[in-house]
Image (tube, rainbow, N blue to C red):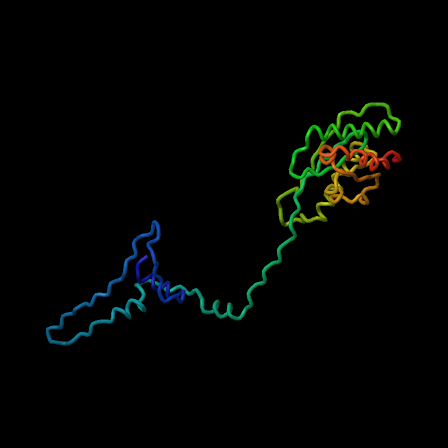
Length: 239
C-alpha cells in the first residue's frame, strides 16, 4: 500500500496519524513520504508559475482511480454515544464435578462418592463382607456373590448450553440409581458417606434406603463398624 492510499484510509477512519513506536517484527521498514519542493522553470515569456503546496496535496489528494470507501464511521460514533453499553451476562451456576461408585452386593446397592480417588479392592471386599453379614442376619445362608461395580461421573458432557447444576445432577443420579436397582433387582439402597447422601434424596426412590459412614472411613477407623451395623438394621426389615 502506498503512502497516499494509507493516509486516505486513515482519514476515512478519522485517525489523524498512525506511526508505530517500534519496528514491528517481520514488518517492512516504515517509509516516510518526503516533501521535496519542486522548482518549475518559468516559461520563455517570463511568466511566473506558483509552486504547488505538496503538504495539502498529500493530505487531501487521492490517487487516480481511487475511490474513498464510505465506512460511515461518523454515524457509528454517534450511535455509540447514544446507545447504552450492553449489559454483562450474569455468571452461571458453578458446575459440580463428582464421581460415584455403585456396588451391587447381597441384593443391595451400595453408593459412595470417590472424591477423586479410584475405588480400591479393600473397599469392595468390605462392602461384600457387610452384605454377607446382612444376608446371614436375614436367614439367608448362601454366600454373597462377587460384587458388581459401576461408576457415575458428573457432568455427563461438556455442553454448557444444557443444565449442569445441582438439580440436574441429582436428577441424573436418581435415574442412574433407579436403573441399577431395577436391572439388578436390588431390595434396598445403602448411601455410604454424607457426600453420597447429598447427591441423592432417598425420597426420590420408592425403596428401602439407609445412610451410614463411607467404606473409606471404616477402613481408616475400624471402630466405626459398630455404628455401621446399627445403621444397617432397617434393611433387615425390608421385604
